[in-house]
Length: 395
Picture 1 (cartoon, rainbow, N blue to C red):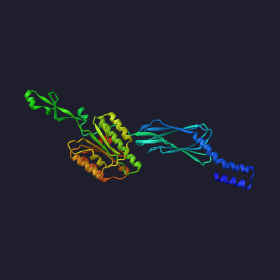
Picture 2: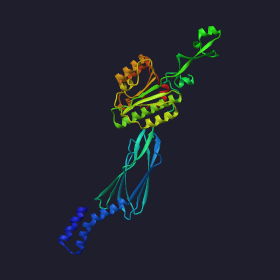
Picture 3: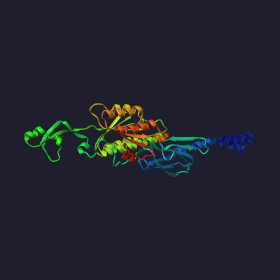
């Protein structure tokens, strides 16, 4: 449009000449310079501020972004485009706000976001474009420091769960992973009502002519190993986000249940390297909860290799918890072999079949055979309620 206007002014002055045609021609010729200077002045006098009502939220909670835009210059800004990005899989996609600002004016906008999946996301203004009134020049300001919000997985409270192999009604000493080492006698005392008959020292009792009890040394038992699979599935980003979110929520629910009942857990996963966290108390759980909210599914090693690197087939056999969304032949054989040498194993399986749109008969057969060997299996489909499956779904 400007080129056409410039051509008309040139033809006008070429054929007619005179003061008015020349004034019109030079005015049109100078317009781009004037337009650029005005937009540059407005660009440097432009200011925006953004803030979040909360930098962290639980999945499903609302996060509000406040955006304030101020024109501090003497000139109108006719064309301003502000791109606001969501930085993740959200219920609301990125938007572009087109507006004009009068001199010394201010505008405020509020955007509500509801996050569907846990994780860390960037939020806010990604860039601002200021155009001159001719629409020829574009001055772009990139935002190099976006706001960040951490979305935590839902905390699912499990009231009753048969996942733990040991009886949770045992004395508190056992719940804190202590047991009596019957190979080491710490002392001898007289019999008290309720003492186990198996602890009676019969030879000494015969000499003393009264029942004497052997007191064994308390020894720390092995921690329950909770090994989780953080390998990404070969699906679309949207589908993987659904599976991974379900997986993390199940892990958090199981971990909380163990720690709430005093069972010490060693959480093992692979994030660029093999990492482990000892969870003995509510504070340890909170640290694990913070970590699991941000962890990425970027495991480079196979889940089977991760498991075999954490166990041995000797006398020391801690309880094993496994959590995965991929049950292949090698993992199935490893689980069966571990069970055959005396490991107590529980498996939490996040089924991707509803994402795939088809059933995997081989996987279904494996999951039906494992309980027959004494392995507790919890199969969680994408549409299942995690609480119901963990409380009543163990087989």
